[in-house]
Amino acid sequence: MSTPQPPAPQQHAPQQPAPHRQAAPGPSYTSPIPVVRTHLGHALASEWTKIRSVRSTMWTLGIFLALVIGIGLLVAVQTSDVDYRDVPYTLSAFFGLLLAQICLITLGVLVVSSEYGTGMIRTTFTASPQRHRVLAAKLIIFFAVAFVVSALSIGLVGLFTAGLHDEPSSTPWVGSVFMGALYVSLLGVLALAVGSMLRHSAGAITTMLGLVLVPAILPAFLLFSESLRPIAEAVLEYNAINSLAAVFGLNSGSGGGSQLAVLAVITAAAIAGAFALLDRRDV
Image 1 (cartoon, rainbow, N blue to C red):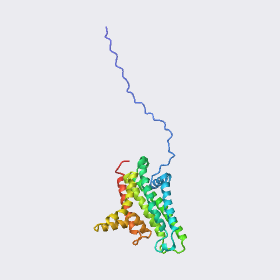
Image 2: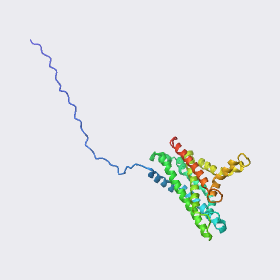
Image 3: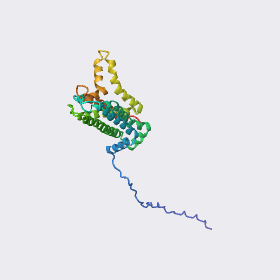
Image 4: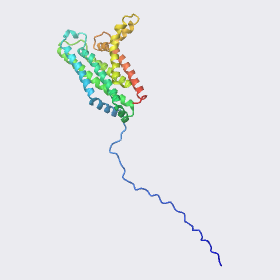
């Protein structure tokens, strides 16, 4: 009797991996929005839209024009030909600028500090991560607006005053239009730089008012001491009120050139400080 043999093990053929199935190519998407490399021109366009679309700009510039032109015309109608023998016809605008410069200081602060106060600066820096480009655009746009408005208002007062008097002034007055507008515009730019550093509207405006008003009052106290007299005389010569007076020919000397140079140096230092602090702090 034979012994049954165990069934032989079945040999399984090695399984081949399933072929990789490629997905059918779908339609590619192309954005209809053109992708362009951003530059300073885009930031300038953005800041121009901001400054002309907010109410604070219209109010501050409107009050500025009302003060410079309104007070200037009131002063001009009270003067005679002899009053302009040694001063330009734009002198009438000086009296309005004494008050109106505060409007440009306020606007310069609000251009930057209002965005920090509302939190919109986060949106601005998200859209334009190059913070230095944003600050540069703010400075350029504000200076252009302030200078044009100041020059137009001073020039209108000069033209009106010249039309009231038959005798021509011995002092050319076109230069005072440029220098007067440049001086108050630099004050506004200085305020913008201070606002960028402080990031607080009330604090920056108060600081700027102190920089304008305190040097006009301080010499009265410093002159009591002989040792402090040189400091008092320098402060008296270069404070904002006497500097504007020099621009319009009320003070003998450089005609406001040295005062304008000092303000330009101070403003440049403040701008450098604003740029240096811009990337070192969060928003």
